[in-house]
Every structure is written in structure tokens, then in C-alpha cells.
Amino acid sequence: MARLTNHDRIRLIGSLKHFFKSMKKFELISNAILVPLDYLVLLAAAITSYFLRFESFVTDIRPVIFNMSLAEFINIAYLILLAWILIFALSGLYSFSRRTLWQEIRLVFFGCSTATMIIILAFFFDAQLFSSRFIILAVWALSIIFVVVERLIVYLIKKLFYQHGYGVKRVVIIGQDNNTLNLIAEFKKHPSYGFRVIEHLNKFTDKESNYLDQLRSKLIINVVIQADIALPQDQKEALFNYCQQHQLGFKYIASLLETKLSNFDISTLSGVPVVEIRHTRLQGWGRIGKRTYDLILSIVGCLVMIPITLIVGLIIKLDSPGPIFVKLKRIGYRGEVFSLYKFRSMVDRADSMKKQIIAHNERQDGPLFKMKNDPRITRVGKVLRQTSIDELPQLFNVLFGTMSMVGPRPHEPEEVAQYQRHHLKLFNIKPGITGMAQVSGRSNLLFEEEVRLDTYYLENWSFWLDIQIILKTFVVVVLGKDVA
Image 1 (cartoon, rainbow, N blue to C red):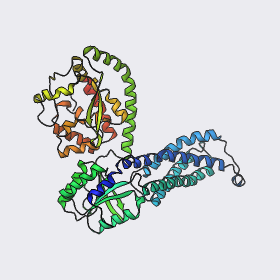
Image 2 (spheres, rainbow, N blue to C red; image 1 turned 120 degrees about the vertical axis):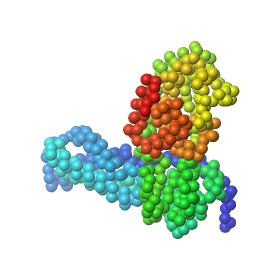
Image 3 (tube, one colour; image 1 turned 180 degrees about the vertical axis):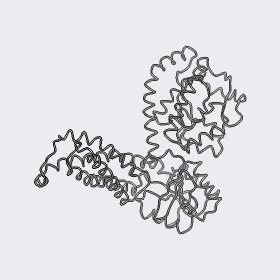
Image 4 (cartoon, one colour; image 1 turned 30 degrees about the vertical axis):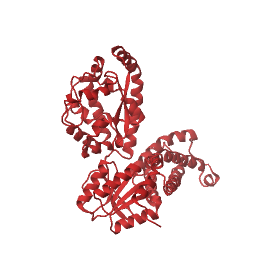
């Protein structure tokens, strides 16, 4: 059989682009759904244990001596199982690292046993809580069985999905040593691992970089794996930078001295230790948590905005002709174009006038445009901008998922076209209504300082950092001054 040319291969895999794109959140969803599933099967184990206590083969040995109705028992179980789920989380059962089925079973056994021991200790110090030792032991045994069966079903479903190409990570492998060949053979032999080798390249030079550009234009590539530890250092650095700039997952087979990084995860593939470099801490459950509070805050904010919109909308209409809201093109997560919503603070069709005043740009330190006395800003618009009220409709962007409450400032396509390579890593997270740059100097920052602050946020994200930035934003808006 004739070997496919690069052009034929690109055209073939390009036809799968939209099919695979719809599955890019498969792993995130399949892990998130484990929490409610675990809770339900644990509740089922508890209820089953309760009814088993009244079966004749149990009562013949030990008569029922406790006095607790099913409703009372379930009310207690609701609270205990919440703590049980927390213990599961601390045991690592909800981590996003890939595990074998036996590793999963060991974690389930450890989590259920730990939770049961805590319950036994609690009842030991207060016997009035519950007096049926049989039910406690039955819950322990049944919880292990029920959760293992549930996890087995999920595991088999994921395995079936992977075997049929759903939710797989599409991989480009770089290298030419035995590790590389063994890894490729292992992925082909076991599609249930969830990795599909799209391409194998012996090295990474400008030629291979251009070829990856072609692949990215036809297919969303998830991961690049540097499998050859003997790859020249300049190629390693070029490959790492390429993945950072184009928001590709990056894994590499590590030597023993290559773990001096803060955002990394170590796992094994085919028995070989592999290090994955994370673009940001905002992955896995951090991403789910951030999206959750984004939704809560945006829903509350949109409700609060209803009376504000009526008042501001009327003032805008009385001040100048044109719409109340404007949709502006911005570049967001992974370099995708989206529409940013704002209250109109400029004359109608202000974008078409930008070319006439671009020569008056007061920012010479980067691609951004700023003009202190921009003639396009209306009288009302000036007040809206000074108070940041014009940005409130961006809550709709947060609600729709194109923005976050906190993140880098979103920029125009024309500005992004002038980005340097190290600026592109900011596309690894969603842009935000506010961010470190906005509360650490607002518009007075040089562009490179803004990038530096946003990069720090990207690499050191935490819930506490988001809370600090949101609180500082209120201080900046209310007091109208910079916050250090």
C-alpha cells in the first residue's frame, strides 16, 4: 500500500475537524459527572444496607434493636455522604490524572474505608447518633462494591468512546529512539488509553514547525509529546515554545534532572515516566470551580443590571443617536474571535473613524490604541468610562462563557495581529472583565508590564487571587484611583 503524502494526510484528517472539536470537553465532563454519580450510588448503598438489616437472615442472628425510621436515616445519610464525597476528593478520586482500573479500585477501597472509620469514631464518642453496627459495616462493604461497579461502568464507557475515536487526545510524537517507537506502538495497540497518534516526526526544526501549522489549520491537535530524551536542546526549547504559543498540551519523557518547574504533572505512559507542562494552574477542578462562580456572579449581576440598563439606556439615547449596546470584536480563549458587549460610550459607528485618528495614538509601547481626548467619545460616554459602567454588559459575556470575571484584558484583532510570540500565551485562559493589570495601575501601565502581570496571574491562579482582584476592582471603581 502506497504511503500517504503529507498533503493527502492533512486533507484526510481535516475532514474530521468538526467531529472531534465537539468532543474536546469530553474528559472534563466525564470527570465532573463522577461527583453526582458517586453521591447517588453511595446513597443507594446506604438505603440498601438499611433494608438488609430487616431481612430474616440478619434478624434471625441479631434482632433489630435500634429505633430509626427510613426518613430519619436518609436525612442523616445526606449529610454524612457529603463528607464522604469530600474524603473521595482528598483521596484523589476526582483528579484528572489517568489511572488504571486497579488504581481506581484501590483508591475507592481507601476512600470508603477512611470514611467508614471516621463514622465509627464519631459514633463511638456519641452512641446516641446511631446504634446499628451491622448497617455501618454493610454500608462500608456495599459502598465499595457499588462505587467500584459504577466506576467500572464509567471506565468501560470511556474505553468504548476512546476505541471509537470519541474524546481522544490527538497526539503528535517527536523523536526517533526506542522510547518513541515503543510509545507509538503502545498507543496503536491500546486505543482505550485515549491517545491517537496523528503524526510522528523525527525532529523539530522549521520544516516540522511549518508542517504542524498545516495540521493545526486542518485539525485541532491536543497534545505534542517529546518522546526522545536525546532531542537537541535547541529543538526541545523550540518545541516547548511552539506549544506554549499555540495552546497545545505538551508532554515529554523526562530525564531525572528536568523537574524544576512549578506547573507540571508526572505520570506514566507504557511504564515510562512522562512530565506534562501545564499552561496554567487553571485546569481540571480549578476550571470547573472558576466557571461555576462565574455563572453565579454573572446571573446575579445580570439581574442587578436590569434597572441600571433602563436608566443608562435612556440617558445614552437622549445624549446621542445610535444603539444602547455595542458589539465589539475581540480575541479570546485559544485565539477565538468573540463579540464583547458594552454600553455605547462613543458616537455611532466609531470603529470606522479609527483610521482617521490612528496617527494620534498616545501609546507607543505596544499594539494598543489610546487617545486622552478621543473625539469619538460622547459626553455621557465619558462618564460611563470613568465609572466603568460601560463595561457592565460584559456580564453577558461571562454568562455565555466567552469571558470570565477575572482574566487578561481582551484586545482587538488588529492589536493581536501585532503581538510578539511571548504575548500569545495569554490565550491559554479566558479574558476577564477585570484582572491584575486593571487593578495594578489601570490604563497607566506599559503594555509589557500588563503582559507580565497577566502572565503571573495565568501561572499562579487561585480562588483567593481572584477574590483579591475582584475586591480591588471595587476599590478602584468606587475611589477612582489605582490600587497597588
